[in-house]
Image (cartoon, rainbow, N blue to C red; front, side, top):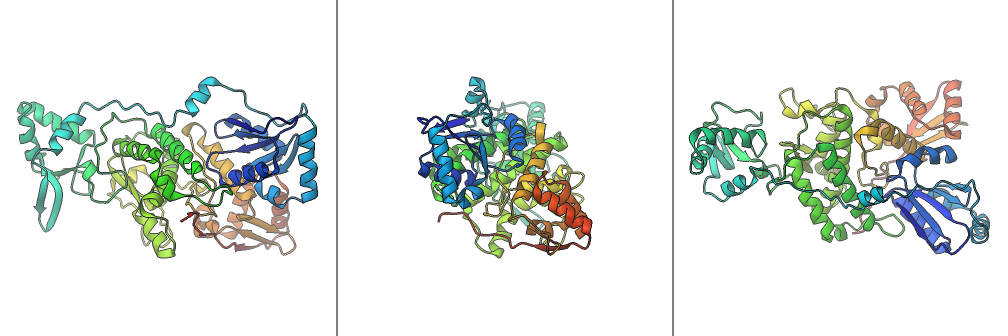
Length: 485
């Protein structure tokens, strides 16, 4: 959680960062070239320091950089710093010890460090039915069946399953086992409704892993006893964040997705993603849904880049977000389904003619009862202009989302207030999803004001709004991809 480099000098440069943050990587590279002792504090692992850092700096974003006790700002401030002033600060760190009012460091906790370095140490308890499913897969039952005009590949009828089970069990036990396979989501009806058409025996099924939608986590059986959804999403998100950070360029501007896909840790990630197939979603609270689906969305974007390549134009982006998917809890969720169907409370997205989930769609049960506007600052789309990457927990989700919004609005790529012109320039995100922020310019601007951290920018916005007749326009969005290939 704390990394110190070059600590032979009396002072130190303290950098508050998070894993997988390109701006943090770039700042550390610059400081490394200056030859100063850098103490890096991961506020992702030490959330108790976030409030203190915000209190000291007035900012929610990372990195935040201190030369001894002097706060200079973030990476952008470091890159733009006057060379003479920078030299003065370097000399300060080289010659003077850290004072008593130095920025805080976390208390080392052996248990926390051990947990943090677990690398997604998920212990798989093999489910009692997993071996049976493996045997069934290698039997001669699964094949192609026709229902009406539709041909269903890799399918089997309930009667075929029951007949196969009778070789191992009595009739009554065979039926109960078939129902257990259905309940545990090892298999599903081929009809989209998720319900049996008639009797169990007459219904056509397929194994969940044989889903025809090409979800990125199918093709193998989820053989582990289901883990809590929120817990699994945290493990997956942390794994892919560490992988992401290992393949960021030294300047933080590019990601070596090709190198990531060849890393053995990515195969470990893929094995874990398979376990999403049978997680229990229906019992999730609002907070658990938010944390789970935000973490999974952000991980799925990176997984999609690794498997399919990064989209480079508008049509490719449309296809990417509408087709890249995971099989979760027995249902297929694309990136579009997660964002607009679940997190936006089943609202139409950009270029969509209808809501993602129909009234009979079983995934509708996952939709939040109402839109949560703060999700827009937590979803990372992999382009340089997107919100920063973070991992979310159900216990603190609302505070975490609020912090993400504050960090986003601090950035001049997201919000610029021009007092002279009585003009506010905002990210395209506010234009695309204006309905989520109130639907009118006035409501949008007050939403932005209410979700800014106390700062000179917030004061300027308050003054502009008080003067009346504020013009809203939108900043160009940076769709440039961060792939190094």
